[in-house]
Length: 223
Image (tube, rainbow, N blue to C red; front, top):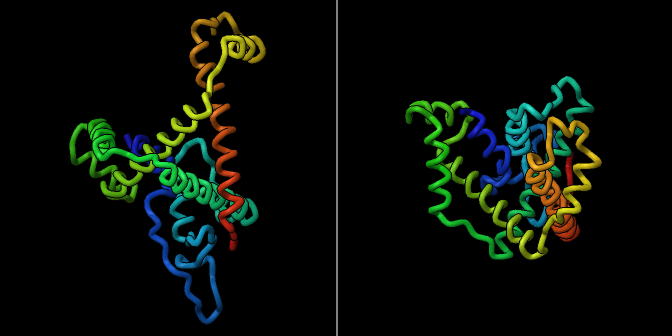
């Protein structure tokens, strides 16, 4: 059941809230390895090393993500920078979603939270998993809200851009990509192919939105 909570954390970890600390100078100057060290600035906001480390820790819970060990200095530095870029993208996207009027109903958040809690046999099991994940229910609620906000903006962009997939596109993908047609009859996989192609088209639109947001964000990476 831990995967349920972890998946929500991974989707919207950067959107917990901007609990940012101000950077401070010490005798050795600004030290980005320090938890309070600022590792990036954008749109008048800051991301600290502590936030980046928490974000990477969340990614590490995903079995599909391999986080380089600290001993792999070059690889880990590259991974951290990529994660930092993703954090910035997420925050810019969330802020734009709100600016574009996307909102999340409190009832929807409560309903999703109830669905998550219902996956556990007892309240004690639920609370234990929250503790194991290192978060409170309020933080989980905030993550769910961010997840729903992102989903809502995706849906808005999809509707505004009239994202659709034709039967011909589905058939062409099937003919080109599916080699074992006996094990995967067209009628069994057509719906999945359509959803995949629609997601690809929508992602291109989302990437374009984020690219424009980044152009005006005055992004500075400090690691």
